[in-house]
Amino acid sequence: MNLFKKVACFTDIHFGLKGGSRTHNQDCEDFVSWFCDTARAQGCETAIFLGDWHHNRSTTDVSTMNYTVSNLEKLSQSFEKVYFILGNHDLFYKDKREINSIEFMRLFPNIVPIRETLTLGDVTIMPWLVADEWRDIPNIKSRYMFGHLELPSFYMNAMIQMPDHGTIQSGHFVNQEYVFTGHFHKRQHSRNIHYIGNAFPHNYADAGDDDRGMMMLEWGGEPEFESWPNQPTFRTYKLSQIIDKPDQLLRERMHCRVTIDLPISFEEANFIKETFVPQYKLRELMLIPEKVEVDANSTPIDINFESVDTIVMNQINAIDSGTFEKSLLLEIYNDL
Image (cartoon, rainbow, N blue to C red; front, side, top):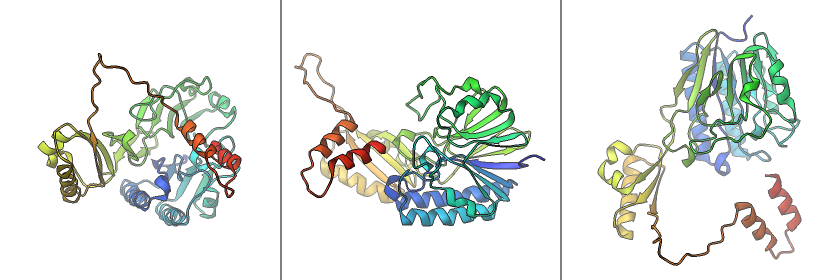
């Protein structure tokens, strides 16, 4: 018997992102409601979540946990079976799965947390792989494989391509007809491997890329993708663009980063923000000065750029307090 007749999938929702932001968590809840309604309307009886339910690896605040429980109840009531893949953000340790933030989900009778690779019939579902587990992949024969994979040459977002670390490769998936995975948020595919795209855009690295939402798959058919119509979006514009065509460019729930390419005063900039944000129900409108081109003949300025790690560690080492133990703070930061 096949594992599903028609399955609905989503991934990388990251409850608790942005410091447990209520706005983000409410977006997650709205998405789950849309996902369940859409999947039921399309006849999906099974759901698979492809990893990273929570964002913070070490702590989850009470408000986020309330959102988690209410949305698990919603998923449990909407499907006959729900399979939950452990993503890397769901793990307390980076290199082992013993402690994770979704273990309690097994208390729901029809929710199955995937802590170890599971093969049922012609379907394999695997969690975030640790150590040398990736070496087993060529030996797994399945029509469908679902996971949370970090494969080289795919794009983490619109700008950054995953480098090759000499371990897991796309070429290892030779005995699977379809591979569906989370982890990278950009929807993309190559050969038999499909990154289905995360639930909805999370930041400006996703600017202009709204191909996020859910995937549905009928046994023996091709994957179908739907984007959440009410998702928050991110855009980067020039001021001249939004002044010229605001009705075409701006919409509700949008985050806008706008480069000032027109001569305007501080008061005019404030007026634009105070007018456009409520009028178009924007989440954010940031006005950023245009970069000034440096004259090639001018005297060069020696600027010392430091990495984020260096800056944070220097700040910790500079703490002069009997309350905080510097070594412990450094250890906590290095474990993030």
